[in-house]
Length: 113
Length: 117
Image (cartoon, rainbow over all chains, first blue to last red; front, side, top):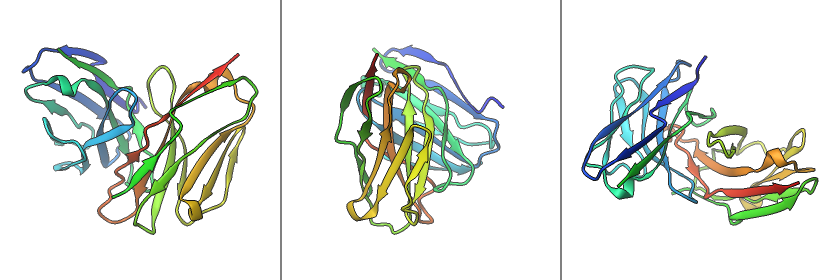
């Protein structure tokens, strides 16, 4: 099993550009999450999904959108990138929810200039 | 709302020293889950342990041990005889157990541990 995979690993965007961060898991997990990690800070939840077709906002959703058309994929869309979105983005998945540990992808380091 | 505080921003020790990383949490739920994750210099997050709010038994795994005390809302992590490979950022996290929690994690700010040879 590959676990949770994320692409790209690194990306530099100009202000106002858009992009999609890809996340795929092969563990048949229902729950998936997007977090961002700013320098010297813990991770903050952007969006989450409890199954295909079901998504909801986390703590810091502004400037982002998600979709979940399949169990495996949970892409994160950045529209009109801003310098405040410079961060490391982690996708995670878990089997059920609160009780189960989350498995994290390797992260995408995004810089907006 | 829940909150996790890791007051130690950075800790520096010499190899073979014991080190304790502190974690204090706040939640109104009676059912909740606490986690520790390790983030080595390579950047990925590695799950270390989960503890539920009804289980205050301490846990030991090799050189790692965890002390959960509900009375002080703390879930501290001790590394015995630290090694250079323990150098990483360590995160404590909380997930509330209610039906609408959906496993959302609230993370502490992280503690950077540096173990010198």
